[in-house]
Length: 270
Image 1: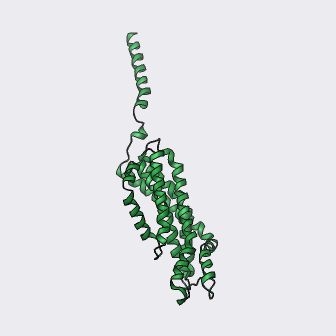
Image 2: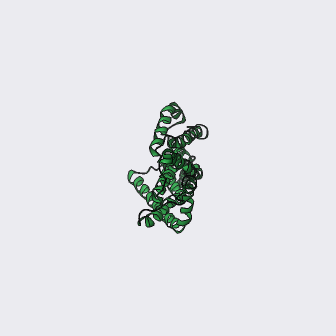
């Protein structure tokens, strides 16, 4: 009987310890740390899924390439109607452009359409390094990636007539602007992608804050240096050769940078 009482007492104590230990210590998911090989495997998975999403979105964009091309041509047609009385539409100078132009339109359109999937995959790669309380930012993160990329790309599209007017006014009446469609689309694509990606600056800053790599105090202390880097970066990534074009990118980036610092300080307490 005494032995039975001891056994029951030992089992009760073991059960109590089992109930207490998970609350006092870290859960298996929290306590586990990924190895370098596991990080590389996860990175490969993220890249593969993102590439597949891009390819599928490119196929969808290829189906509607004519509609997308009409939308992309609109800024150029507007400028031609004002500065060129000999030509109302862009020209094509090579037979191969009949193939490369729809392909370029589909690839850029696929990148834009696949941004939600790419943003989600980026979050799944970063989130294992965060605490459970910080993982609640998954939905805001993905939405921010999509909205900021769309805002940057939309700003580049809206500013395209301004850039073209500036560039054509430099020559003035000394030459007639005969735009090549392929070169115009390359110029527009570079502007859209550059603005869209650089507008992700607040997302990158918030992620670095969640990972405790940067803090709002440190960013404020280095504000002048960061502002200089943003202005120089805008000068490098913008496709125009005039001094006005980089300002169209630098000014919004400076505002987004300050907003990201405010989010780190007030929402994340970093």
